[in-house]
Image (spheres, rainbow, N blue to C red):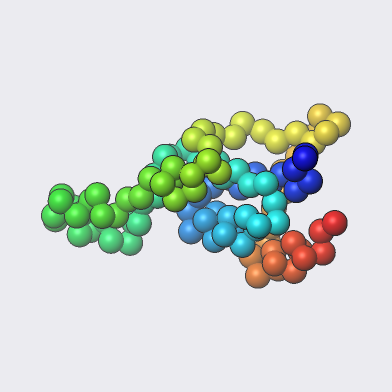
Length: 104
C-alpha cells in the first residue's frame, strides 16, 4: 500500500526544528535536514571550556534522536513542481498545529 502522507522537509535541527518534527511526525512523512550531524546545547558551552570532559554531555547525535528521519547535508535551493524557486516561511510556531489540522 502506498504511503498517502504528504512529505515535509524541515530545514535545521535546532530547538525549533526538533520541536516541529515532534509536532508533525504523525501527520507527515518527515525528513529533517541539518549541516551538522549532532545537536549541541550551547548555553552550557562555558562549562565545556573549563572542563573538557563535559563536552560529550552537551552533544547528541541526530541519527540517535531522529533515526531514519535525519538527512545530513545542506540546502542550496527549493523548487516547486513547476521548477520555480521559492522559499516558504512559518512565522509563528504556535499556528503550526492549527495549520496541520486543516491540511487535506
